[in-house]
Image (cartoon, rainbow, N blue to C red; front, top):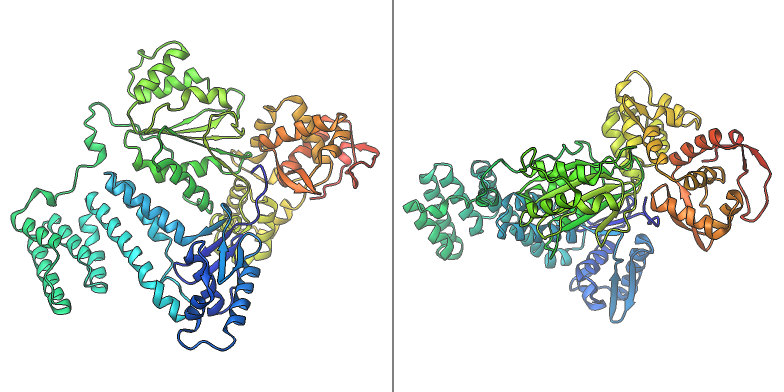
Length: 629
């Protein structure tokens, strides 16, 4: 769970119909004029947009007498609809839109970030990465940009945005050509040229693709067609680049062949580099912002190694997220991709020396030649990976002491670490604390697993199942798998079972996958005082717990109670939320059920939930505490 619970994220879309979504749910922006005001302020990128400019964008050359008052009304509506995360500020002579550093996504910015990274990868000689990242950039587009705005704004900005899209598309086609996909791109290029006959870059790419497909005559004919079109439409000859390409076609110049890719250019002999990533979940849903941040962190230019951690409670989807990100950046690491299970949540975590032995064997050290001591293995490992571009996915780390010897020490390589621990003592990694899924993403995942037709047939029951899983991906996967395995059961039957607190966790088991087992393994790794704090936390109500309220129940002072609660939060057993003018600690609903079961077995008497933090309460048997959430 995150250290402090964030408000629902806001997404603002310009590359298609103008849209806004909060927490996955659409925001009704109204008609064309408020959409135009929103789009104009977003496109201005923290620049004050004067009233005169907004007037021209809304009404062109025929504004009404009341235009100033109407602009104020539209700006106020945008401010109200977008909520407190976005500031629409009156800054004479116009309006200014301010965005927070986190929590608001804009598709245009996402597109430009992907496009810039893809272009850099293409220039840097990694066409596989370039093709993948540029496809991600183009996938952000949902149609014609600025759909639903007033004509003056569309006329002013739409062609510029379309030019950015076409430039990125040409770069993606160049990457595909470098990867030898010439036959695949020919139909796409022909369709694009029919739509954009004056783009000489597309003409040149078609000529190259045809030549590499063994169709030299067709490539020369494509040049003649380009020359005829340019002469007829513009009265111009083809550009110098297209003319040079034509000469190369006539002579069969070697420059027409694809460049050698980075993998073959390394010149290293010996076995192929390791490619050990397990497959990413085919039904992975949501988490696009987190995947984008990880992808950017693992492909950006850094002076040293890239180290990034993904942390969270059991079952929250850490490994799935890490594998999706790792597969997306795999081409960026041509010297190998290694996945190593560190077994940190189990009773026998992998010792660093044993982990290094495995890594050295994967990197080509013969069996029997592995150094003996931990220090010798660390030195050999660092020497072995120096100068390489290697991606390590270190899964289920127990803690910092286990991890430090395994992390790369020089630039070029990267480590992506998952752990139930916070790993706050590591020196400066990027961090992605992972919390439960949004309601919209949780429903989408359950729909993929259980089947759209069943969810559509019983929407109320499906909502009950999703609600019982409380955004935890493992719970949703088990519930979806149970529904798929028993198509003769109505979803209402599963929803009813999950709604009973005494059987919820028992229902979240499928074959060898059990949420209770995952929680048990993590619970055993807590020290006795933390386990006791967790058990008592579950008895004190579903609301956030203040430290002084926990102190009495735990028989300790408020400072010690807060230390225990903060430790549980750092280990992702609870989250920190603002509560009653301060901070409280709140259990995930399924963790609370687990902790209550442990409470009933391990404690004698516990206090009732306290309605007032300082009020005394009688003791009752643990098993008699009523489930309240």
